[in-house]
Image 1 (tube, rainbow, N blue to C red):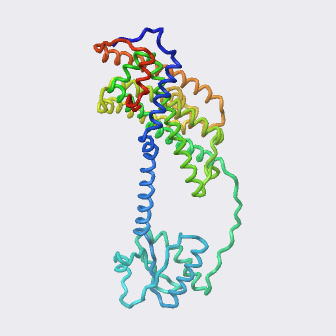
Image 2 (image 1 turned 60 degrees about the vertical axis):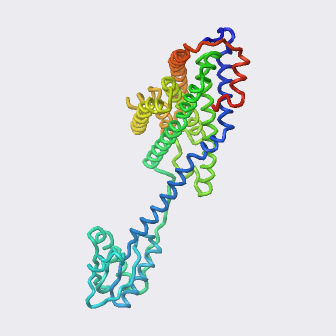
Image 3 (image 1 turned 90 degrees about the horizontal axis):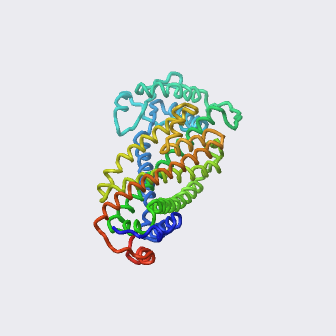
Length: 417
């Protein structure tokens, strides 16, 4: 494929901006982008509904009741004492139900009857109650039944002694545990967003390779600019998506009455932690997106993309597990290795921001990751240059002017980005 003279090409950053603007606007203005924004909401809604239904089913299936088969007065006293105790200690005491004390009553048969849904049966008297239950429930409720029987025998239910509560702000152990949980949650969210959004560059690349737009761009602009433009266009689309999802999520938490004060404060504080999360997402996205673009350069169809990208995806999962393990080993060789390796560095450093107060390591880490982004882009562009030029070597063709090339790209129907 003939290419334009080097002197007639756009400068690197200007050409990258042209490609980024084209891809960004083409995707942002497409109808498919609406479904892209709604896509993550469907599994969340389905998961919430499934969790609610599952909890309801489990609650109904595991509902525990204790049958009281005593004389009517004793049964009423036991139920009254249980209700008084439950109002003070909560749901730890199972509900009591009255059972007619027949002479031929068989507690074992009552417990075996699934329709009764009894977890235990109490017979005897208030002075000497007899508890029938499986071994697990027997040990669990023996003390409660004895306390209730004692209160019932004394007449009106006795009032438990008041306990004066003296809350403290936090403890060292709880703060460390909370920060580790924040670090793990941040790593998981970062991983899911990067893996979900970085794969978009593959479908966009394969589509443009199929309709020869890539070859037109390769003849007009430097290959590094093409890579940079596509990466930053998809990064911009990802930021738009994350902004929408984050706004919806924050509104949902606010409606649920939750706030950040209920979670452990990260080491660098919430504002800087969110800023670092955005920076590490950008670096992680550009790193993995560069790898995916290089993989896409070797694929001609969607099936080939799936085959070639699978090892990259599996390797990234393993890298994420290593970075997650490094959270609990601060200052060890494992953590430093996870920070030094470019693909795991964003995850390891985000976790470090949650557990450590120091800020200067993040400046060094971001500079280190930016250097590897440049290396990955250059290596991917070099590989892609050979593949595209090889595929278009026999095409020939007369060089076209810059105006003709880019007017064709932005004309209606020239590409869907």
